[in-house]
Length: 281
Length: 260
Image (cartoon, rainbow over all chains, first blue to last red; front, side):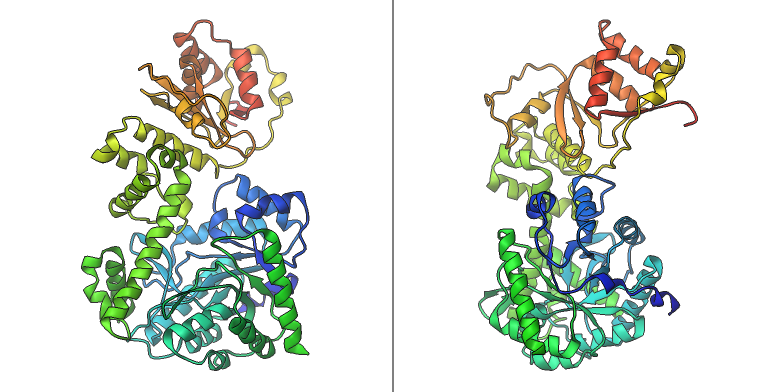
């Protein structure tokens, strides 16, 4: 696909970034916190104007930015909504981000939107549909996007392949990159009972364009991906494995609930950089 | 082959209502009891996400009715008006209509009008940023030409009329409010103006004459027509002073001639 030979989007994103959340806006307006790059949720900036876009334009002048969408619903049988895609395109044209990413999931159903990252059945029919939707999005946006593996609490009987084999095939057939959420791999390995190290081997070495790290919580035997705490030791270890397999991939610290002071996120990013270096040593 | 569509329809039905979850539960690996628990987690997430969006858009309603009653309202609202947009900042538009129609909420008669106001405040936050106004552009026009100008309100600007003092109710429930917590219910119609000087959305109670002028401006009328609307309500309406104030506070952000 010729459009994908456009300049590689992540040229400017290196090292470890953090998710920018509204409660930390002030610090980014008043000073220049030390972080390699920032990621925001695209939908939070879908407005015509206003404060959020003002802050985003400001940080865009200081840091490389990644736009991470949560609601495009690439896995919906209904297809991608043109209105949502148009808003994303408008935001990309305004911000000119270094990276654009979305999830391998669905949330829209007919007129309804569940506003959640719902799991997919990993079937060849679904793969064909998602490949087509990702292709349509990349053509409209005229750029390559990254697709993230989600955490899940349920698996479908219909699935004929693993989530990671599905994602790897999606990347091959659509030309998209993979945003590998290492915490999600770990959460799913516990929830569904598989070896997370083996899961990483299902993904091609050069396919991963970004890594996500976050904390999770436990409800009985089930791990809940709430992005509300520090990264746990097993996930750091899996991250080192990922670094060895996928190389120096830009990494993001995500924190979405019980958001702590900015210093805690920046500290977590420093720890991530240390683990990444340890992996190469 | 429409297996994906059928599966998502079943999953979605189970998410929306526990009573419709039997079909969904057959889709999942593992025993039914566990699948039921885990489906409930997804149901809870979807509800919590939508409830957070409602709470973010309607903080004053939340303060007036209290947390417990508010979360009951949010749950009932979601059942009647489920989210349809991937952008949750768009969710909650019908909340005022819902409050006006839902008997437990109607016990507080001004609740629906305050919700109308809060929705406009919420949306004004995301309204477009107007270009800076250059007074020199219209200063050279003759007084006759100036009367033909069409005042352009800020895209986030709105006027709401209510039988209750909704602007005052909104004001005393702001976190930044430090005055006397009292609201006088006099029974007169009031006009609330939503506006956004730079990035912070404000609400003010305005006079009938001011509301008449701004409603005309919002309707695309000329300065002359808007002025007549204001003066029909109050002959002493001071156009110069009002315009100056509105331009300063970004209520009016430009003036256009026909064809512009």
